[in-house]
Length: 417
Image (tube, rainbow, N blue to C red; front, side, top):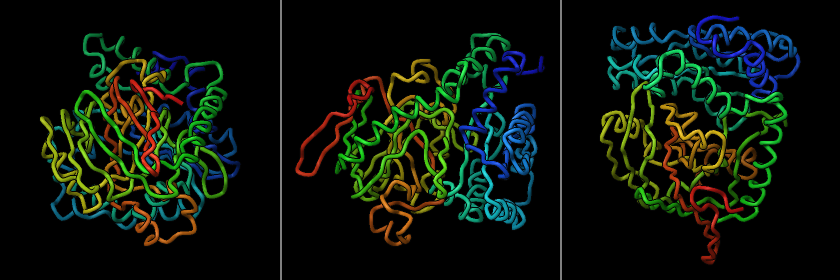
């Protein structure tokens, strides 16, 4: 039996999880390069994915190691000029990987306390510098030109945060169970389960894309009253997506969302966050955003106000939205009724929106359109892309068609179609 955090999951189940990442997550092709981004604390799982990838025919599997503790020391002690500089050699790696046709798997494991001693301002400056240097890479990620997949494993700090009343061992056991359940990776045939999961996505996306609503109206008892205008010829994406070569993949494991891009200048009203937003290792909680003609004109957080300000002030585009997502309350993940303190999981329990950059994939025939044409269509551009959860048990979503006809899409947080 593998020791440490893996004592609470069988080797057979862990391999199924790794196979899900490789064969469904990025849908790795024979003789393809795979890049695994992983902190050193997740070495066991990263190496297992490496093994599974070679079994699937990978030409090479490179593990891009990081270390949270080293990163913390960098943020605290590095020279001020270095914080504003992302090395060219780092950017060159991503360029070469892209030219080689690489796929990317990202392993995450939440640790909310690791950066608590670090200035959020320094974190934000370095992240901004890296986004600028890696602009092309992130553009390809958002437009699904390359295949990538994000998935999680637990750690003691995260598990005891989610389950503060349990022992460390029981907390780890419980978080493993919820991660696998929410990721639909706890059955005998996870890949087949994901194929079935994707069929429901395809059916709902077809209805939404044919309807071409002018706007979506979100209301809840928590105070959200938000009218989200949509671009003409918008597209909903969800579940499996297709890369530029026509190969399907699942960017997020888990995923329950169907999303499109709002029109940059047609969002009005109030959004009240319902789950903490984790950004740069800091927590933003009990917050709201006010929109007028698409722009965030006011905002407040009882916890993390300075972090929220740094986020919104990243650039001009971070004052606008790039994504609006419909997520039902009756999914396996939502039914766990758990606050995960992790955006990947919490955003997939209820409706959310994305501050910042929009994906060109949310517009029909975007591959044939220039950046200026996409901007004219209403898509936002930004260095930032951060999702904010605002769904509730009584969330109501109404689709508004041209001429004012209304269609109820969600009632009490669940799909009505």
